[in-house]
Image 1 (cartoon, helix red, strand yellow):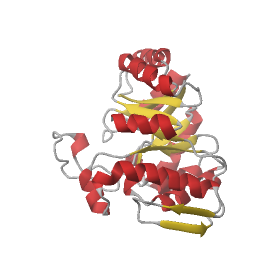
Image 2: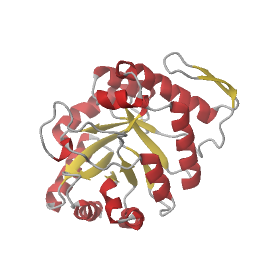
Image 3: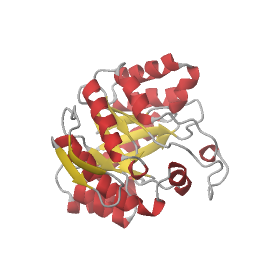
Image 4: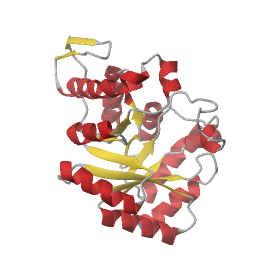
Amino acid sequence: MKLSVEFPSVSYREGPAAVLKMGKAIEDIGYDHIDIFDHVVMGHPIAGRPPGPYNAAMPILEPFVTLGYLAAATTRVTMGTEVLVLPQREPTLVAKQVSTLDTLSGGRVRLGIGVGWQESEYDALGVPFRERGRRMDEGIAMMRAVWSQDPVTFEAKYIPAEIRDMTMLPQPVSPIPMWHGSRSEAAHRRTVKIGDGWHGSQVDPKQAGEVVKRLRRDRPEPEFTISIRSHWDGKDIGMMKERVAAYAEAGVQHIMVHPQDREVDDWDTVIEGVGKVAG
């Protein structure tokens, strides 16, 4: 079982040095991976959500800038996103950001990607929400093309871009794994067709067993990684060990842990606690 932790955006409140200190601590504890979540802007309040910490102005650091900063303070732990809302970004630029991060980190990048859910965020970025599925498929193909071909030509249908006999260097150190955060039937089909892994959330160990069976039916190779995001308050280590064991028995290969409340100062407790679970 591989373990990762969601990097706390709120760590910057104690200064830039605290961000580096947290990243180094995560690596020293023994985590396999650091994830950071992605939103450029958030609704305030978010329509349809009840009052609470997840429906308020929450500080969110931009993932690639933050991961580049963390790459300089770490040497072993891999890093990526959970999940990058790819269709609302220009994929050629994302490909350049990722290849640069991969080069400077020594090949330590893995991307989690998804279509997102917040229509108002798409509106703020000038991207059509109803086109997000098609833009997702085309964006992935475009990124893989510029990462692997030189020169590269790519004619897009849904994304307003045209690439003809262009070069993007440096290319990634090695192929970038892309795990899909998927819930809908269309997203499942996309995941098993072109994904390198699945990263789910709000799935308990019992439910995970059924999800694993379905994914393995279509993608039996162990290189296709099945990952689950699980929240924890950092208090009951015995319970968390049982949860990890149950996920492993269900066939889950990777767990990403995040605090129950991203705004509460329990990051240190959760990060240190999961280190004990890993030990």
